[in-house]
Image (tube, rainbow, N blue to C red; front, side):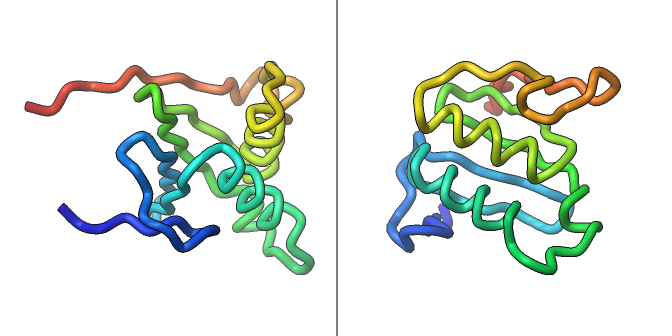
Length: 110
């Protein structure tokens, strides 16, 4: 098993950490705080290209669910509210009705 290093804290990521995946690879984050800081930092980065802003992201949460975000801004809003312990709806996360926040249950891989 490869060692997973947090993209924010640069510490080893536990098995119940967060994993953000896009078409280019995976990013590992230790906890909700690291996820929030990383996502908000990227979403508010000056000069971030439209291509990166609009990239579809899949977030695997510690409970095993996968959340699909159409934009980094949607992920940043969700991560911020999650880190603060506040529920957020699709509309509040910046995900339109056409682009619903999708939840996929963890599949057991034997």
